[in-house]
Amino acid sequence: MSIILKDPKSLEDDVIRLLAGFSQMHLPSLMDELNRWHPPVDVFETEDKLIILAEIAGISVDKISIKQIENTIIISGNRDEILPEPSPIFHHMEINYGPFERVIRLPVKFVGGEVSAKYRNGFLRVEIKENKTVSRTIEIK
Image (cartoon, rainbow, N blue to C red; front, side):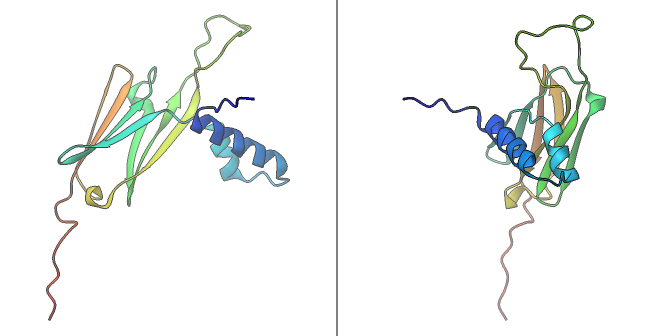
């Protein structure tokens, strides 16, 4: 017998739905999480910056938000549903619509670093420069 594992994020979404189904209390934060989709991201480091690359095609720039809160970058927004015809009957559907959010934890040396962002060809690229003032030597007296 072989087991086929799903995409880790899809599996996480399934687990959240399962737990919500067992719960008699539908906590607002859990329900909010169920209604969001999570676009794929790559996070990598170069010599002097951290780069976050998010695949969020089909979204206008005015519907994307990037916030830095303490040691995290939060990318959120909304992709409006595009129905090709009125009342379609789907045979296959993989494109996510509606609100989305990704929370990326920053390594310490990038917390407080200068942040810039570009959106081209369906990819959001967020660059965070290393904060040289995060690390310092403390003199012992």
